[in-house]
Length: 557
Image (cartoon, rainbow, N blue to C red):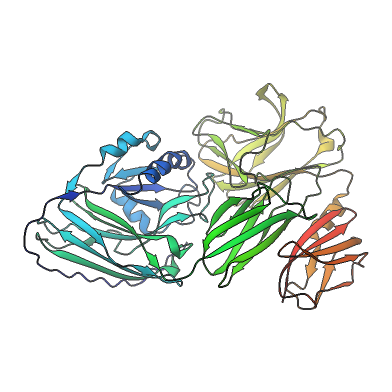
């Protein structure tokens, strides 16, 4: 990821203050090196995050997202490597408290946290008025009061962090990230301070353009300031404070329905920069404190095809509707529910593992290939669908993963497997649909359970994005025609046309509130649909054919 560093104006003013000062409490500094592609980071953060959250007022926290393993965290910045190398960090996850490495993060608890409290120091950091605009222009102000003389060479560090991020999801199942470093306002190796005398005040002022960073939303930015002793890495003092903002925030309500107008409960709705939410019993999600702007969204729910699009917030609260399409498959699973779908079982011996999260199963292996690392499907009855096809999508994440796909022979013992085909994902491979004909299966189709495995030596990762079984009663040609059905032009200010070879049985158009505004029957495949009378905005077409219904989002200009 490119990171464009902006010139930073720094001013230090020294003022003499008479009198001696007592010590002040030292606020502990927690620095973690982590990554959304790091398998062990997920369980480590599941322990660390709630501990720091429940003690949020008594420490400073900063996370450095790293560029490994694999492609690394999307929010990695090059400057993080400077801190990584400074500590000679062994890998990720690694936690440093007050400049000392902690050890196994999985073991950290409240008693450990409390043991870092109670320290005293002769330096205090005072937050000053700091502001960010809607265009992400940041002004930072603070003061450091020096209560005792310090030799030259102490290092000042000033960082910009975001309290919560969502869009740097990787392959380890994490969906929410805390205290993510967005920029170093000082040099990443720190700004060397001169010799300091008791009573001096260091005034800190920075101007910074955060629009060139990974900042998602400008209303949860923070400043992290700490001073470090270069001789022994110890932290002299740290502080963190929120940055005020001068713009309005709005509320957004979205309802999610299927093509027949039924509300969809427990759908996973993800709004860019604002994170995931689950629809309630009325099919609704409600976001608060949303900035002006255009946001992409994605909705998934087991049994439905993913729905994606854009939502615009333009100076007022917004309401929006999303229609999800029902797939015309014999069996369909895209792993998009809020929990692993029923009947799917992943197992492995760490550091090999199968991890579920963010609409996919992720396979890790870095051990002996004899280690069993499997994902097992529910038991299926395919006896009425012998002409169908099994389709699964695999995506390489790191290394050159190998494994196999097949069936479980003894459903009481998952180690008894029959391989149908091997899995080989070279380093240059793209996400790929693999197809296996049910007619090639010689075993009993009425009681069958499939598996996927990873078995190669060396660190390798791949993901299973989705799995479905086509309906053998439909020809593959007809299925493809339904999937490829499109509408054009889109956007349009007058008429819409359907691009398909299928016979159209009818078209319904719904507005953003889910209201039916147009209903046409027996439309010729080359005929026009008049929308000139509709108001500008977002609409959803529900196109009905003999082989299923397809929902398509359109924009009326």
